[in-house]
Length: 291
Image (cartoon, rainbow, N blue to C red; front, side, top):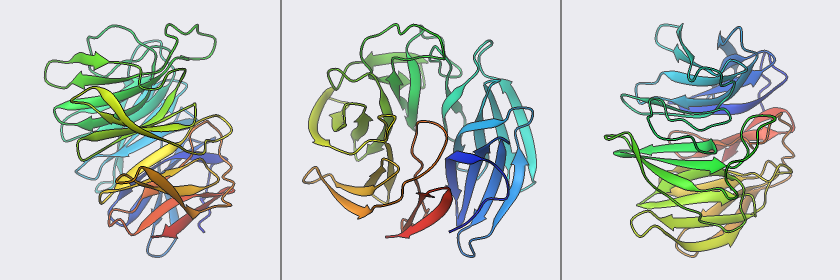
């Protein structure tokens, strides 16, 4: 287990090589955890914002953080130790709730209305998860927006955003009655998502239909997190880490009893780049789970 030098808690992490970068809240700091030695070092912060909602790593190893309450994107370059502030993504929006980065573009899901940055599409429910898969970015939503806002949709839905035309190609409801899709990953031409009804669904974007489903555990906030590493899929509700077998569409427990304590609604889970380990929280401590 590794104790971070600062922060009341965390719900954002991204891996670069053998290093794991973790974003905290109060204060909003970025820590580097050397997974070989277990040592943690604060490397940057996102002042004046006290919350890091999300992190992602670009192919070149740079780290990107989404913040609250100013809704900013901040870049940290491990090679130079420098940060770059991209400022508020959308004027008036307080949250960058999800972030994804490819070779050329940062994609941010923000605030009470969902935007892809840059985007010219119409307002939609909040973007909960974003997965770029060139030439498409797949975005999953929740109907609730920022605090105090009125939902504009009745059910959550994924959407396909064309990165070349900057337009939404399609969006639809995969799970009836679901108001949030808390995470979404792509694997071998299929999408896998977790709905707040406890359904993990497999979706074929070419046929635009759900092909299979399985029930999975959810956090107290009715959310779950998925990661894909070396063709394998894992998920967590903050208490249990499970493995999804896509061939049989069944789940099996990897480890339980974590009882993660983190402010926010999204359980934390990250995979080592070599696919040999997962990183999660046990209570308030960072733990490595060897696969």
